[in-house]
Length: 89
Image: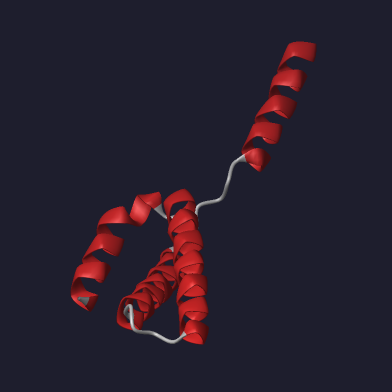
């Protein structure tokens, strides 16, 4: 009996520690936001003013953070997100 109780507690602990995958709508919104940020950085160009280059760097960081979040939480939707990206281009 003690083994089954400790096994049950271990299973509950592992289940609660798992990262919950995001839902499709969350992933879709994040991907669209990331694409928008990436487009903003690409249109900044080299001739951008100094204040604009700061915004561009911030947009790049935000896009990178979104990319990491997508990688961690939306792997199961990778093909759908790829299709979404292709449709936006």
